[in-house]
Length: 422
Length: 123
Image (cartoon, rainbow over the protein chains, first blue to last red):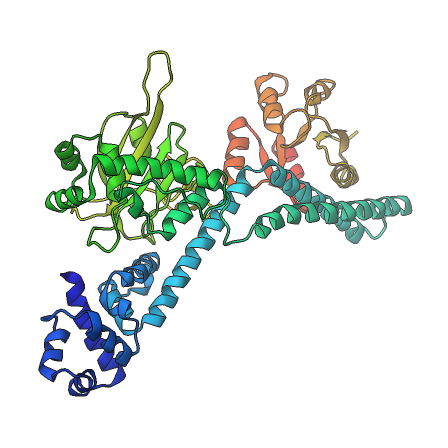
């Protein structure tokens, strides 16, 4: 119902922006002004041919007036607002912005996506700078050579009575060191260029490619609800397709255990409570967490993200939402319930957390870890932790979790591994 | 003969430049460029002051510093650490192991000279 309410409001706002009187628009649409008034005040549903006529007259995409397509723009807008709290925008008016100025809203959303992409790239480069031994060696070489040149040049400049032999010797040293500096600088730039040539828009691993593919589908695979496991023929044969097929197989098993219609109905009735849903359907909690995160879009389900990691804490799958996104390089904050769950296998954790500073969205997290797949005597179990994340509805005071030590501003954290770069 | 300083550093032109300015200031400068045999060099004649690079071939300057502080005959020798890394954790590491002074590359000759003089006076 909320969507219908918005549709009328969007029509009204767009009309006012164009300076059209209600009667004028009604006439052009071939309906009475009073009927248009009911539509604009959300007392009559508008759809089909009339909606298309309205969108033509108002010069705006019908989808933006009507349905969840706007959500694709709305979500990054809210993320942008969360990322810049100093701007003090009225977050509640984001929908109005989408309805009245769809092009500008789309531009802000695109910029937000770009910022996120660049931040991810920055994090990846930061990780590389911190851990890549070749880069560390090159940096050391550059600094050491610069030190030698600086020290030698100072002697030459500050010692007017320098012996001719020493002068010649120091000039020779500078010549050698400057050549070394040029070489080591080029080597360093070479490493960094390789990173840049990889392209900002490209993802670097098959797993990230698979996640990006699912992201483009809104993390919903209609085929699995129809009882089929998609083959992903449009993806080049290789590890990315294999990963997608493995994930799809698992989602298909989840769908078989939790049929869509019954699960959606129960989820709404139980306020999307994972524990109650697991009990209701008699399935393990991780199955419910995954199923909730892969429900169809535009069906009024709350926004829900997901992360999974293995026993080493390496993120093996994630569906990011808003400003929730775990670093893949293993430098995540250990305070996320996902990692806390690893230390208490079998125990279901529920926590409200919040990133520090810029990101204001508190998240409600449901996490559990346990063995996955076949369990047998004498065989090491494969442990997996699963965490569902959604914008918090609880009034609980959120615990602070970080984006990763290198970019985390929290100074008094007992879990800090190394100093922050910021 | 002036006071003796041992410079343990693997960059030959840094060795030459620092040796020159310290010699000119009246110090007797000994040099060594290998981490693994650095303690042998120290024990050949304990110097009045040691300038010690962190990143050395064979053995890290931190390990050498730990050994220096563990031995009664070198425990009190002032040690100035040189490093290309200037992060707080490096400074904390050097201090916790007993470094007397810490200098980040690229430094100036004046800084080195001033620190060496200050350490000599303090000891």
